[in-house]
Length: 414
Image 1 (cartoon, rainbow, N blue to C red):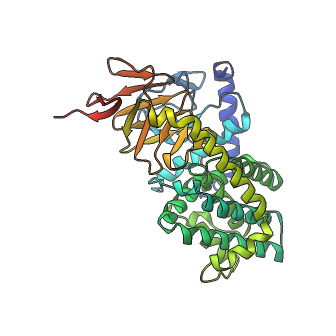
Image 2: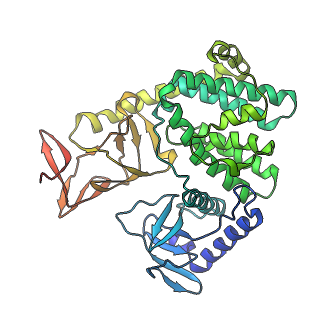
Image 3: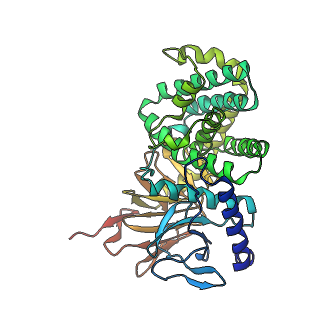
């Protein structure tokens, strides 16, 4: 399907749309036109279609379009990548042609490419707490208040912003050990969302529509741990932009966007936000939110009943995560309570090699230290290992050893 629409002619059209959008914005937000080397990559065939050559000449040119193949051992995601001596923005293609998603994924990665060139990169974050019921209650209340703040003006907006910051403060008070990671997530991915929406939309009305549609989409997810920051930072950045904030002054991923909004709108907060948050929650349909979360907990219990034998009781293969990089779609995530998070499809690279899970899923622990897949259908062919729905390319310094009925990915002893 993707090979049909990703013709060089079609790619050239997309590159032109991306360049035109970036040129129209022309650095007003960040002080630099973000357009630069971009590669579209097909996840299945790993075909590359790029707008510019790489320094090493790996990509082949025809009619101003550069093509090649992305190495199978590398992860595909909306991140900047060094390929052939050139820093490219990477845009994974969606399964079906969707112009808005294709263009915005490219601009998303172009923004991350810009961040890397100025030394503002993500150091990683763990926001597993965002799948706990209390955290989800606070975040949903905060989203409802932020939506109201974006849709209104005057005194009503001021009150909504205050309420959002009270709910934010309540979450930070409850999960102090996660606050720094939450802020990094909101900054790195939320500012990317804000930027690509600002650049790719043609009016404030279209921007607001797209922003709130994305909020609704993420709101519906069963897991927020790997997705909430994408919209959360964008909501605060929207309020910052309305006050004329100079985004060029942001030099670090550790800047608290909520604090900036509080200062811009001159919001006064109580010393302990949870002292007043409960009464404010009555204004934001807390009973409906609680019903949603109770339903979610029932669904999770059902999922655990169905999945626990696959990943807990039956023979499995264990991976220890040392410096992982994940590639997944947020809608493919299902929390399984204390057991961890189920990713129905995912690609992950680590020191031991590259694992691709296409169906059946894999279970990642809540602390992102361990991963397991079912050992059903497990077989070996040289350094390629596979089971039902997954395959693994293992680095030469690693092996899979059997421990009782299960298996463990282990580094070879010197």
